[in-house]
Image: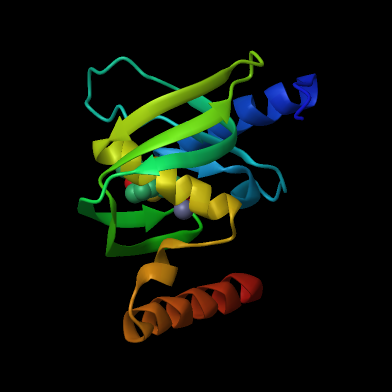
Length: 153
Ligand code: K1U
Ligand code: ZN
């Protein structure tokens, strides 16, 4: 049972601000150092599109298509690295909203890719975990180098 507190509302608000500032299309609480099953996303990318900020608490994938879709993913926790990842092209996701209601929605296209990427963050998984060992090691080494450089700066 998740209690909807002011602290949780503030976390979601701060996460949406961080995501839009980045800019990104999604963000999960562990990426901002918070151990909670909270994600935010807005995949309305077109210039004149009406924003659709979404906040998902305790999201669960409850159905997946057999068909896969390949998308070149990036990650705000792995700057400037991109790779093709194959995931189910459509998913049904159930979650708790900030209003205390339970929602189930069918996602496709970029929304489906993004919600799976964000739920992975909640489970401690990154998009590089789907790559072959060579590509994954290349990105991991680049990130270790970046970390050392940042520590020296
Ligand atoms: O969770 C994250 O690290 C955010 C990530 C989400 C994501 C990207 C691509 C596929 C699946 C999930 C990002 O938002 S990276 C930035 C990005 O993709 C983007 C930024 C501005 C405009 C459009 C896309
Ligand atoms: Zn990410």
